[in-house]
Length: 73
Image (cartoon, rainbow, N blue to C red; front, side, top):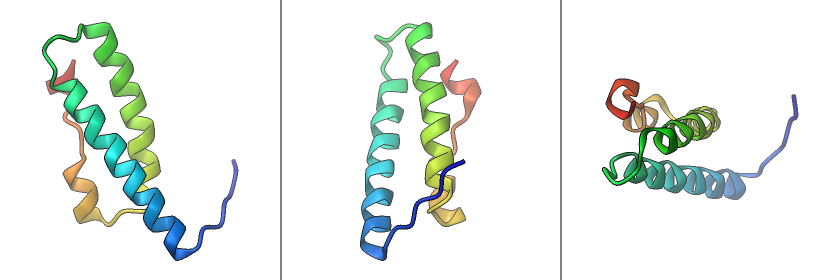
């Protein structure tokens, strides 16, 4: 396990970057042109990024990015 100290500005920037990455992956998961194997890979990555975001975000913000796995299989 690694630990990193961020100041307030860096936390806000990390929050922004993670949210944008989650938004992009949600768009990709809704793309009907992508096949199941690619969507599974995106879903695995999404879960990792989501866990990172969960360390910074409030529960209200986090609920916006909760993934319904059944929808994206």
